[in-house]
Structures are given as structure tokens and as C-alpha cells.
Length: 438
Image 1 (spheres, helix red, strand yellow):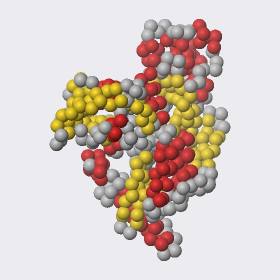
Image 2 (cartoon, one colour; image 1 turned 135 degrees about the vertical axis):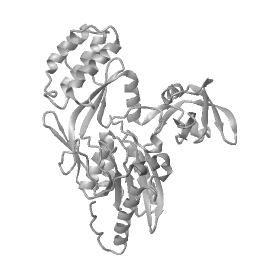
Image 3 (cartoon, helix red, strand yellow; image 1 turned 120 degrees about the horizontal axis):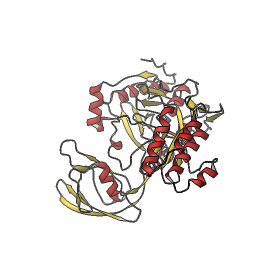
Image 4 (cartoon, one colour; image 1 turned 180 degrees about the vertical axis):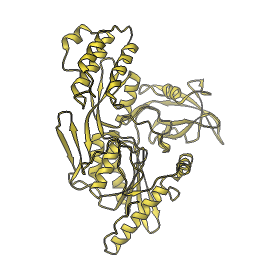
């Protein structure tokens, strides 16, 4: 899980927490082996410990387990008595530490539910993104999610949330407020809000299943070219269909080129990154994975690209995992010019499993390689055009998010310069000049 800071506004105060980078699958499998042992341990916290051990034993990418005697680990785990699930959870976490793999991790039921909601790209709630104002410490609305109950009730960005079901929010943390607002579909929650020019007012909202937007797009006139700007903040299960809609919509508006913004994107589902890559790349390899036995799986483009227009891809040090799959495929196929800072460098794939008590386990099951075959793990992808932001520039974009994707955004501005050269050359029937790497 990447928990690097991001400065993109739609990631602030979301109603879920936790992000997995490249997720291979969401599995509800139970362990294949050890049925006799599990039967004997049924209804005991120890059964959760053994479930977790079995999954790691069966799937972990490194069959030496980082030179750990994994069989001895099981004996140690099962030799102890656990008086609570919390003790069992802590034992699992400690058993995983010697693997030295931050992506193979145990998730308690709350963390697992948050993760599955996030990767599903859905939540049950009213559709409000919130934050606590740094200066006033007041809970306020960042934005209502489109077509959500909050959106339909005309709740607006900047509205202050004074109370939730009659409980004052003064001093309340985002997590507490989110927990109170979330709930089962069809149930209601009452909010007391305050808006400049309107004063204090009450709204009762009925919770619904909400599709979270992963893709944001707009048309920008940049000099002599019309640019389709698409920001992708996560590879959720709905990201590919949202991306498809965005590209088709921008095609209809006759844009000349595209900017795909992957900055701050921590990753998500492997299949989503492949599906999105196929929307941009007509043919050739996208990525291949290698499992613990050396078996490979190759993912290729399938002649289904939605556009052949020039494109630039924005990345930074927080572009990780599935973002790196997409950026690497676009770079290696020379389909797009990658602009920005070196990416995070996470080139491993996880599978997520549900355990019998509602907790979960994320396990690294394979490594992935871009078409070039270069191992980018812990190294990242170097952009075609390197432009690092200064701390001052980063701070400005964080405090003034409306500047992202504008002429005041240095990396975006550099991408536009690249695209202008390409588009203008195409207009006069000349090949674009090679991009100089800086």
C-alpha cells in the first residue's frame, strides 16, 4: 500500500481509507490444505492464523519466503493460545514481518472492508467528500459526488457540516464523521449544514450505493491546439468504463491531443490498467508477469484503441504500480511522451483474500515487467522529459488545486509544449521532431 502524500483535491477526505497498488484479484478462496487442522481449530482465533499462513504458503511470490523457514513459522503460530482475535491478528502481522514485503499484509475487518470498497470503486453512503479546514478546524464539504444523494440535494463545496444525526462535529476527525455518514443502503442520515448567504439548514439524506469517480476530464484550449485533459486518480473496477466514456466524449469535441495525468495515482487493479492501456495502444505488449514458479503471463493490446491522437503522460514519485504499468506501456510503445518525475517503483502484484472472520490478507503473488523487460522495482520509470517540481511548486499546487492542469502547473505546461510541436508538425504533414530527454 502506498501512503505517499498527494496534492490532488479529489483525494482529500474521501469516505474510505486504504489503497492497494496493483491488485491481481479479489479472491474469496479458503485454503486448500490443512482441512483436518482447520476443522479442529474451528471457531478459534487460531483458525484465522492458520488460514493466513496457508495462503502465504501457497501463493507468495518468493518460494524461499525471504529465506525464512515458513514451516517452522506455522509451528510457532499454532503452538500459542490466542484469547482474542486481536491477539491472533497481531501474531499474523509479526509472522509476516520477516518476509520484508510491505505489500504482503494482514487487514483487520474494517481495513479489509475499506479496501474492497475502494478497489470496487463503490461505497454505501451519501456521496460527500469532506475535509477539516486547517485554520478553523471546521468540517466542511470538499465536493459532492456527481449523481449522489448529496449532489441531488444540492449540497455544495464549502458547506460547513455542523452536526451529523444531531451530534456536533466540532473537534470530530474525518474518520469519525465518515463512519457516522456511511451506512446501509436505504437508511437515512441527517446533516446540519451552514452556507454563506443561506445560514444554517438541515438536510436528511437516504444512503445509496455510489460509484466513485476515478476519472476526471475536460477540454482545454492551449494556444492553437485543443487538449483533452484526463486525470486518473486510481485504477478501480469502474476506472476503465469511466476512461472509455471520457475518451469518447473528448473525441466528439474534436480535441487535437491528450494529456493523461497519472500523478499521485497509487495504482489499483491490474486488469483495469490493461484495459485502459488497450484504449490508447493499438498493438504490442502492455505488460507481463512472472510468478513464483517462473510462469509468465503476457498482456497485449488487442487492436481496440479509441484514439491515435498525440498524447503526453504526466507522472511523479507517487505514480505507482498500475500507474507504472500504463506509463511503461505507453512509453515503451512510443505511444505517448512521459513527462514529469521518476515514478515510485512498485513492480509487484498482489492478490487479496477474504478470511473467514471478515478480515483479509494481501499477498504478493508475482512480479511484473514493462514491454522493455526492465525491472523497475525500487527503481521507477524515468520520464522521456524529466521535470521535477520544487517544494514551493508542490506546495502551491497543493494549496491551490485549481492550478493543476493549467499554465501554472509546470509539468502540465511542459507537456503542452511537447504536444504543440507534435500537433503543428502533423498539420503541415511533417513528422514531429524527436523529444529531448532532460
